[in-house]
Length: 363
Image 1 (cartoon, rainbow, N blue to C red):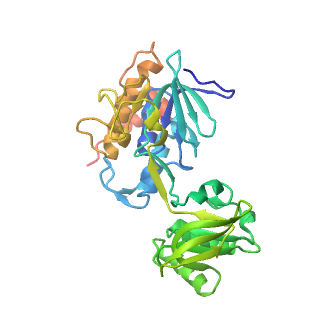
Image 2: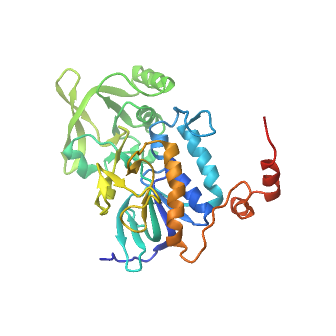
Image 3: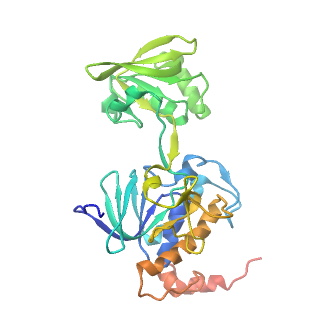
């Protein structure tokens, strides 16, 4: 059954779920075929797993690049796809996909954005990254009000009793900022299971100096619950390192325990799956639902290798596989970026200069 189409519906040639390296390269390959794309990602920034898990770690197996970090790879992919101007919808999770009577797909996000698209490309990697939360039921009703997964505006924490959960660069930086950038500053306690942190050395040093000066507090332990008054959190219950329960005053909690990938709504879109991965036809990387393609770590097929460069290969075949659905009356030609004046126009490069450059041999 078709879902209700709301005002503000975006009609699109293609929608890509995932703004990681494979999602960005998918937009590039579609652009070469003159197919415009919208990219949706649950994270508030592009890069996906590549930035979240190894943003500053070296990658050695991207063809033609001896070494780059995950962040550098994403930066270069953004520059590469820029001529095609894909529209980014960040901080949104695709939670609904429904086939329409005309063969197009109605795609909706948790923020109410709706697309009517001819093709959907799932490049969600190992899933949508979502904030890790402690397994404390009492936190759920407070999420978005007194329990946050990112820093609010300084005016929202001025003079409050704030507890930060985590040991990362983000957690320690947030603790420092909370205690210094509002007037009056917040009273801040960092909670982590032990007095060892994964933050950068300089950040850790600043944190420890402020701790010694009494400008912030630290508790080694584990959150077990919260205490409330009239539905509002007043303190956190903690099992400390000595095995005793203690209560720490807190009317705002910032949870910075990192991100966890979850397949999420994709598992309920009616796609043929195997071990929570989408099965595809390797000729076009189409799924068993017409108009839906899957590329990168989210798919599976005999001989599948979870490598970025393999995902790039899949993007090319998926783009060519989708083109007849998007432009059914258009003759599809394989063109080369080295010599095609049409592609040079799309890419915004000078054709004569490009051809001259391609004729030169560098030893």
